[in-house]
Image (tube, rainbow, N blue to C red; front, side, top):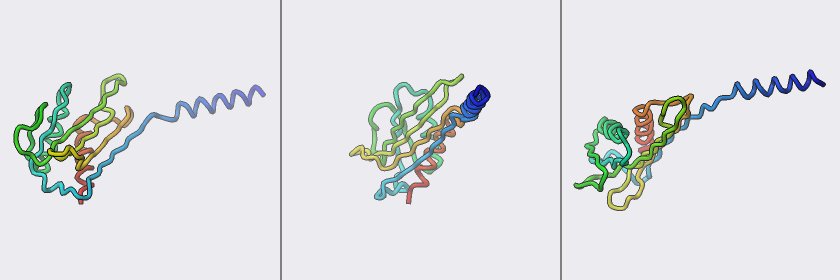
Length: 144
């Protein structure tokens, strides 16, 4: 009986230690009526507490041929889309970006034209630049 309990305890310990908290998810979707290639000017609306994510998003969109401006207020001029984002950070020995959601919106109605998300826990973490690249690429892959 004692050996059986030790074996069960040992198997439980091995099972606990061998399972990790490695989760990663990346998605992108575009409204069927949206033509992303027609959106030539975008405004990335900066989150007030953000130091650099808005710049990474703007730079990545520029590689797609989009003219991008940034700011914390409403866009000053005429733009084809407003880009909003939510970045969630986590502490695990160092700070890392846990999740990033980017939404491309109609500037007049605020309707979400396209959205993308990337979620990586500590063991599969990516740099903020890699997270932005993953999300934007998935959005553009979702375009028809």
